[in-house]
Amino acid sequence: MAHDIEYEIVGDDMQAVVVELDPGEAVQAEAGAMLYMEDGIQMDTGTGGGVFSGLKRAFSGESFFITNFAQKGNGKGHVAFSAPYPGRIIPVDLSQFGGTLLCQKDAFLCAAKGTEISVAFTKKLGAGLFGGEGFILQKLQGDGLVFTHAGGTVISKDLQPGETLRVDTGCLVAFQESVDYDIQFVGGFKNALFGGEGLFLATMSGPGRVYLQTLPFSRLADRMSAAVGRNRGEHKGAGGLGGSILKNIVSGN
Image (cartoon, rainbow, N blue to C red):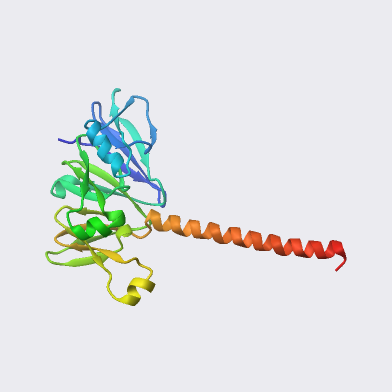
């Protein structure tokens, strides 16, 4: 049974979650997520279920270690965890989600002590071969609070039985286990070559809730990389033009 914790989410574009712990209560988080902790909070880093559990997380691209933060002092203590890039923190009560939440491998931030954090592979052949970001998922199981992070703005969709939603694989943050998840080809020669959305989309079929993000980190990184490349070209071009003008002035032309 997960520990019963209180929390407050602070900030706007760069959010953090402040968790309040009573004596004996604890929260677990990915290594490196902690922002601050008050006196009385004790930090203990481990594999979170043995070496095999750590290896599975490492294989999925996550940290090998999970860090526990427990209140060992008198009275209440606070520990805060910050989001890694601009966006929103999503609190989810697993007891209201059938006990399981599946999320992208980089979405998990922290959870109440007692939550089982493991790796889930998509069952569909299409998702396995072409899923990209959505192929390896994290499975959060328990009956307490978990916190995931999304880039940009969060959009939640409650799908009815049989209702289908097709989304960019990078825009998918998390979803209930009851939602059927698969990868499908976009279709159409022009769409595939010139659509700019990738060859495959994630198909989500209800019932259940789906969380989407408007700014996946991979998309943000691509834009920044492209901008850096353009700026370098502009600087070189400006430098070349300036150099030519200076050369002409010096030579008297």
